[in-house]
Image 1: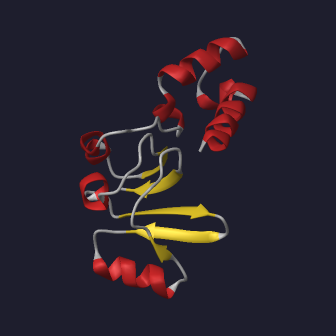
Image 2: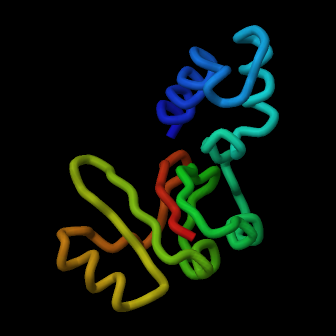
Length: 122
């Protein structure tokens, strides 16, 4: 997750005009840090309420704490996916989507470890 964020910041900072930003690279970096979601960079969202409040879309996030109750944290999401140690993982509140994930070789998540990055599809 950190690498994706850093790459996004690098992309915007190296060509701020293409993102509607003008000024120095330092000014562009400050603007990005204040509003990362505007540039397709999502901040870490650490509560079920904040996750549920995200508008429809795709978000690269990270778990600030161990998440053991998938329904509590991700009950409003369509699904989440992640990759760890050569294995694709996923979870959805919908059994049909979980079945499709298993058919495609995903292992169903039972929890997310603190510091682990994941894609959330809202």
